[in-house]
Amino acid sequence: MFRPDRVVEGRVRPHHVDCVLFSEREIACRVSELAAAIAADNPRRPVALVGILRGSFVFLADLVRALHPYDLGIRVDFMILESYGAETESSGEVRLLRDFDLDVRDADVLLVDDILDTGRTLAFAKRHVEARGPRRVRTCVLLDKPARRAVPFRADYVAFECPDEFVVGYGLDYNRLYRDLPWIACVTFTEAASQ
Image (cartoon, rainbow, N blue to C red):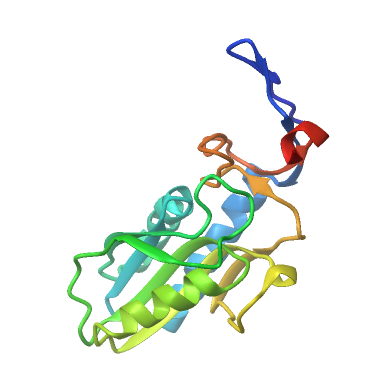
C-alpha cells in the first residue's frame, strides 16, 4: 500500500493515495500487448500517434517505444484538451487548448488518451482529427471507465477497464500531483476535501 506523507508545506492534504489498482509490471505487459495488436492492425503502414495531453504523456511514451520493433514509421504529435481543470468531475465542456501540427491527410491516425470516462473528450478529439482528412482514426486508452459514460463511445484499444474510482499515477494527476507514480492507484478523499 502506498500512502504518501499527508503533510505538505505545513498543511495536511485532505486526501491520500492507496490501493494500487495496476502495478508497474501489469502496465508494462499490457503496453506490450497493445503494441502487438496495433502493429497487427497496421501491417507496414505508417501510423501517426496523436496524444491527448496532459495525462497521456507517460502512456504514449511507453507505447511508442513498444511499437519500435514493428517498424511502422511512427510520427508523434500532441493536442491539449481540457474538461476537468482542477476538479475531480468533468465540466461536460471540452476545450481545445493546443492543436496538433501533423499533416494527417490520408494517414492512419491513432489517438492516445489516458482515460475514457464520459466519452466527451475522446469523441471531440476523434471528430476534430477526422476533419483533417485521415484515412482512418482509431483510439487507444490506458483506462476505460464505462460506469462514467455520458456519450456512446468505445475505444479500439484498451489497456485496462477501471472501476468508478478517482485514480492517479502513470501520467494521471490530481491537482497536478502524482503523475510521476509508476503505477495507478486510487485517491481517497476525506470529508475536508469534499467541503
